[in-house]
Length: 197
Ligand SMILES: *[C@@H]1O[C@H](CO)[C@@H](O)[C@H](O)[C@H]1NC(C)=O
Ligand SMILES: *[C@@H]1O[C@H](CO)[C@@H](O)[C@H](O)[C@H]1NC(C)=O
Image 1 (tube, protein in one colour):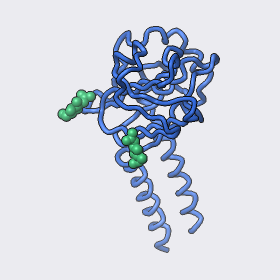
Image 2 (cartoon, helix red, strand yellow):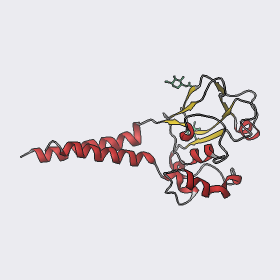
Image 3 (cartoon, rainbow, N blue to C red):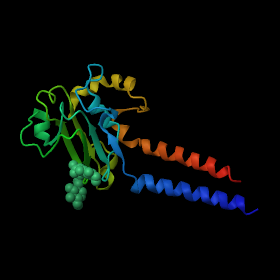
């Protein structure tokens, strides 16, 4: 008759464990843009990379996976200035093996673009912001006016990104898909554990 108690206890433990994992330990490997290929944005979704990065929260330990045919593209990490001006010279990091994993090791902003001529101008570029140092985590670090041109086209995003219960762009960083993930896993474990009663 002690089995009910211990089952509940196990479930609680598992749940707490999952919560801890998701807040502290879990590192995500993000496929950039949720796309199977890092490439020129399509006309239907020209700002795909901008929207994608705004809808995710990155942290130290996470990594970005850029997939592409190595003969056709590459990834470079650049400075903010080079990102804005599409200057492909003197990149911070150059990756061209088609399966490029960038590991996030510190907080701050990271800027990437394609190493192919003309691709940066066509918005094949990605800026991510890794929040850190306490309270700044939830405030958007996309400073005022940093991406003014993208604001008017927000409705397009809502149409094209399935998980977008976002009320405003600035609140996006408060919504963590990982929470949904771990609660689903929690329910799954609950179901499995109840099966043993
Ligand atoms: C990131 O880490 C992976 C695995 O630890 C490694 O293979 C890869 O080269 C790293 N990426 C960079 C850009 O250093
Ligand atoms: C956070 O703090 C560390 C060490 O104090 C510092 O090196 C880093 O630049 C800070 N990052 C930000 C985004 O302020």
